[in-house]
Amino acid sequence: MNEFFPDIKKITYEGKSSRNPLAFKYYDPDEIIDGKKMREHLKFAVSWWHTMCGDGTDMFGVGTADKSWGESYPEARSKARIDAAFEIMDKLSIDYFCFHDRDISPEYGTLAETNARFDAAVDYLAEKMKEYPDKKLLWGTAKAFDHPRYMHGAGTSPSADVFAYAAAQIKHAIDATIRLGGTGYVFWGGREGYETLLNTNYALEQDNMARLLHMAVDYARRKGFTGDFYIEPKPKEPTKHQYDFDAATVLGFLRKYDLFDDFRLNIEANHATLAQHTFQHELRVARENGKFGSIDANQGDPLLGWDTDQFPTNIYDATLCMYEVIKAGGFTNGGLNFDAKARRGSFTPEDIFLSYIAGMDTFALGFKAARALIADGRLDKFTEERYASWNTGIGKKIISGDVGFEELEQYALQRGEVTDSLSSGRQEMLEAIVNNILFSL
Ligand code: XLS
Ligand code: CA
Ligand code: CA
Image (cartoon, rainbow, N blue to C red; front, side, top):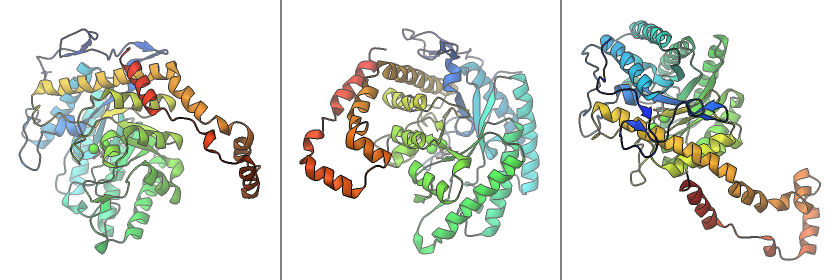
């Protein structure tokens, strides 16, 4: 078969002194760490929508990158895209991919026709996966947000017909995910939110979203899906107010609607910062609630207030991300999906490889730095000591439930002023420790 990137050979690890732009400097896929290859620790995934479909179109101009894969007709293009995707994964030593149904095959008139052509593309994908047995589906999802029918939402549309259509589309995307052995299924709340409360039945929309999720879980489990369901929080864009605002909001929703046991979170860096949180904050909230699942690895631009989906190159953030991942016990069904696109000006085929190399090296370094931070132990020890008052005396009694307000009042009256029980938070010292670790790698 013809190669799509004949000038690009398989990307190899050359180490940090290499000056070859088409080589890994930090990511050695086969390096064994704690008995596991780096590729198994990091579980990188290609995002089909950005890498295979995104051509740099923005609201001010048409695409700059050619993502036609040499084909003018949608069916042939779907197939060529699959061939090109496997070449990219193979050359970059990436073992996973993620897709929306419509990235694989677009809409064609009726739902029945769309489904039939989608199924044919999935057949081809399944064949290709046999040819490359180490390439796996990390997660699938349905694009229930771009067609005009979803202008007011899918699961939260005011139209029950649209809800039914979305359910039918999601059912089919779940079928494909199961068929391809996907270990996850994502719900990102595309247009599930509102522009104005003046026309919105907030309570009904929330209840309906929960109804849709219950139906999806019931259906998928009946069909034998054993992977994880994820909700991917995002605070705004495309709607002014997205219902799945951030990790804490989603956890409250899952608890309210008896969905808590069925879902984990897919945390995206750029969505965290849009919600005015750090990436690490969102991961910590997920982890401490037992809901860490998967990651959409990218970064926003601090000067821009929208979802720029840039390839992650910030080692500091990647380190603190991987710190949370390691503390969560590593990835199980999830992984690091590059929900990221090369900038509109980075339009050549090589830019696909260069941008993935940048992101993969960043996370390989972040992984090593996070391991070093944990092994160093200064951060964890400092935090542990900061909370030492909860291990003995009155702290221990509060935790064990042995005291109430009356006893605490007695204690406070006897104890006198308590400011002397505090010690410095030492933020600057801790930040310097992180720098010390980062620059000694
Ligand atoms: C959009 C989201 C989307 C999800 C999948 O902002 O990041 O790409 O990851 O629907
Ligand atoms: Ca995402
Ligand atoms: Ca995004």
